[in-house]
Image 1 (cartoon, rainbow, N blue to C red):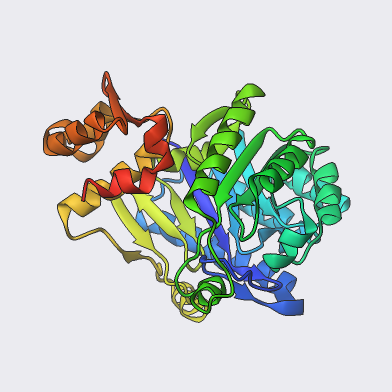
Image 2 (cartoon, rainbow, N blue to C red; image 1 turned 45 degrees about the vertical axis):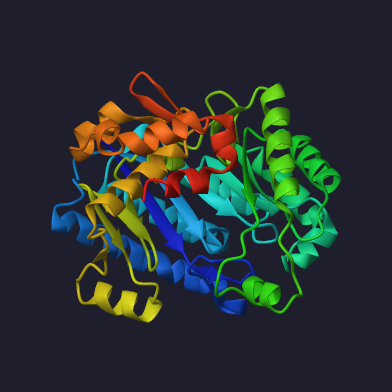
Length: 380
């Protein structure tokens, strides 16, 4: 088996009002904090190895730097860190190393030096190609900043672009223009996420005060349908509800999540799934650092106590892939036959035209993909 490693870098120059991840606005010292953070992350990986849950003889298939704003990491630190990682664990010759990139945090020299260090996939957080919508999202960059970053990235690695749709007051025509602007940059991969009003965020508070309003369901569905049709016309594979890739350009790291593979998450707030157990590192950098310096793994076991809830967590993840979930493999991994345990739910959803069982594979229909959350919650 190979290792899939996620590294959470929680530092940002400023926090976006819609963000529900564990992040911290760090202002002018964000770069220094991100660099120092990787020393703790390296030590945490060594503790995972000492625990026996990460084998030093098994190679690394992917490393994914997420956040936060991991592109704040200096190129010198990225080089020394990845060099140390390669000494700790062997790498597959085809290793995929992804860094989420935010416009205005990296110039071409930094990107070139990231590439020399081993980074070969860049996920650019464009979010929108319309300045007025970037301003409403309180992003710290402009469309021109994104274009400059993309121009540099394409010279050194695989380009993925992240977009957010269903923004307040965004029409279908607005979204079509945003998508075409992204396509004009010839990315190999696109992630398209609907704006979500997460409880506890400033965006949620704005909605509660009547200052921001979610898009109508009809607009959201129209955007989803247009996106899928347009990208498939251009040869993109719609391989996960929110993700599209040209052949051979899927995110190997994220696809491992949806295929229910093991992965190790490093850093405060990171999640792991190892040997059928789910863990989370507390979203507290002071506590995280203290436990690492004491030589203790900060992870907490978060397995669902209810058997059905635990099964459904994994089922929900697997159904996000448009090719569906192989129930034979699921049974081999978790020891439960979904077809018999949830026979009534599957039959009801089949009759409603929301899922289909093809051989051993359970998958969402097109109509099911439009209401994926409702489909998956039906199993609870």
